[in-house]
View 1 (cartoon, rainbow, N blue to C red):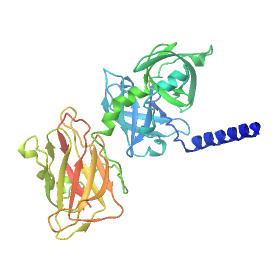
View 2: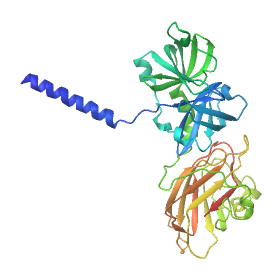
View 3: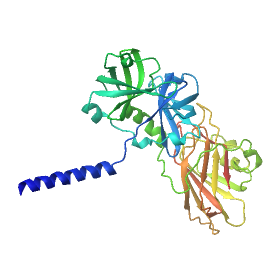
View 4: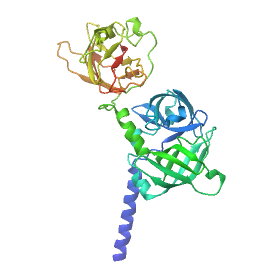
Amino acid sequence: MNALVGVAMHVVAGLLLLLVLLFSPEPARAELVAVNGATGHGFVFTYRRHCYVILPSHVHGRKRRISILTAAPSATGDADIFRSFAPATDLSIGLVRPGFEPRCNDRWEDLPDRVDPLLDASDEGTLVRLSSTGLALHVPMAIVSRDYETFTAKPVGEEREAEIFQGISGAILRIDGQPVGMAIESGSVSEAVFLRIDAIRARLDRLLEGQGAAAEVAGGPEAETPAAGAAASGQGCTPGGLPLKSAVCNREPVAPEFGCSNLVTGEAAVLMPPGRFEMVVEIDRDDAVPVSEVSLAASPVEGESTAPKAVRIEIDSSASGRPRWRAFGTGDMTPFGAFLLRNGTAPYARRLKLTVEGTWDAAQPVTLGCVGVR
């Protein structure tokens, strides 16, 4: 009888383990990319439907545009660097240009926010780097020291492939398949220094999540660059869009000539920091009209102004003057000032309320160049 009970307990334990494996979320792989012809590396991830690349600052240097290449089957793309933490930390982040989405599958929130359990469990890992043709190369590594933000690892083995070559900066070290560090320095062929993944998350969480970024809803955003000159047409960012009657903000401009009412006439608004503010835009129509998309554009100047980030849009169709706001959608403007939010249900509206929940730089004035409604 006891033997049967023991067998039953083993079966139950096995089934429970199987269920855990089946229903546990798959950890992020951190899709590795070669940068600028494999002169360095980085990794890509998606956050609120935008694709980003993280890499050491010294890999791109003063250049703001980089090319990226994935492992085979290879895909290529381009990215624009918009924030560097150098010289304090050898870390930069860029926005990947549209078209790379099929290879940008890992979610930011799935990257480990603590790698100590992995580092405690093993002092051995695998360095993964790419050749200029997209061939993935694996080098066994032994972790020899670590602190709160970095660790040092050495290759193991006698073969030449175990040496550390120039161009590994940005390559990923994995333990049990999970990313734990990104190479930032190699003083010789015998060792490399890695920035821990949880240190990278600590640096970038506040930047990416903004100040209370809201969750997406159905009809989510697709970032596109509005057509040049659209604002001057009197139709906001959307050629052929609906005319606007008024735009009113609850945040004071940096000067009277940069108020939100400028957006009705195709001029820019520049508001005082910090970034969170609300703007109510009224459509110049006698009756409520269907609205299927809202676009925004900004032209931030580095060190002088910033673009909105997390944007929540609500609509109201009432004629009573007492708005009853309903959700239209939420999304992120790119750090370069492009935003397009579509809603396939095309609800009727007389006015819209845009709530900017956060900006890309909370210390800078917020600029907004145009608002388009279609």
